[in-house]
Image 1 (cartoon, one colour):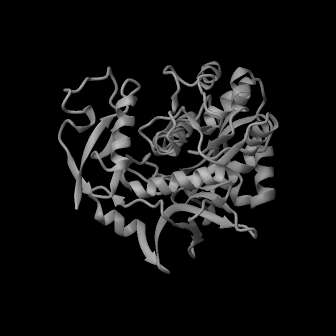
Image 2 (cartoon, one colour; image 1 turned 135 degrees about the vertical axis):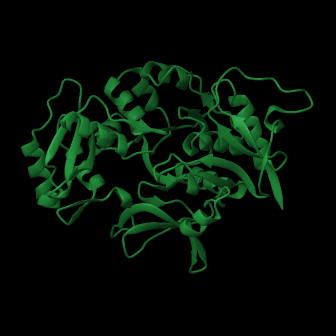
Image 3 (cartoon, one colour; image 1 turned 120 degrees about the horizontal axis):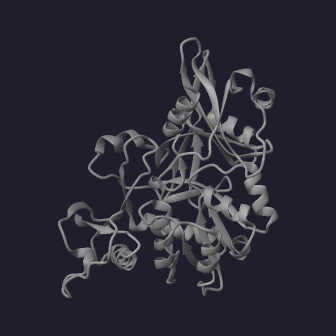
Length: 395
């Protein structure tokens, strides 16, 4: 069995059409939906042909309701097929963990899984999401958007860059954020200082780990959602199983065979991330396996180095990359963004702090100062662009 797949524009003027299309896809009365970033004024459809049913279609398996593009962190973006049952399982598990259904504020692009999940969860809960006003993310605008919420409970999903802007502003936006019952934070790693400042302001932050292939976040604060199983393979790779796993990749059975594998009566996703399981079973994310640096024969986890540097005063943001080196293969390089009005730590202090905790090979040999870190997708640091920036600034 199969069903048609329709592209649906997800620009700021077409969100009502997208929500209608998602609702029909979830209940089986309409085709599967593939949101696109096409913008512009809404185009009215012929009365007999809803906008999301017009145009040429591809075909997907009958259970697929949504096809979402990945952020491209593993290379070229992939089109991930998500079933209605997987999306419902994800929404139910999220509500169970957070304390029940709520009204959501949408601040993320509805072309990526985190933003789409805000709309899907709202549809399944029978609530209407409030969409942030266009014009870029600003604390004052966030406060105004939050004031339009009418539900007794309220949730929002943010990326660290958005949370940092609210915490740094410490004005009406942060006060509004503190009134949310849950603030899901994902898309990129958040430094301990940012999380501590948010907690001190009374913000109920829940850090999330997941990806398009798991309908978004499936591990909250290191603890798997109901129905989710986590294990590590011999290389420390994170493996995930559960009812919210994707059906596969659109038109790429070769990728399906690489990413998904059966074991112990379950279907497992082989992620590209390394992790550790603590004594209490909590999952700690160590970073992407393909981001691992090799300097002088020693393996270095950029994420582990970044967490340590983020602890130092004056550091607003940090990304650690490896630059080519004839002698060492790669030289560990830290790109730092200073906090407003603050002085960054010296290279010597950074090296000493990292070496003391991770050993000398992990200590950055070079330090680069930047105004900001390049990002892609829903606020993820673009490591390739950061490396190019670092190389250019060191030339």
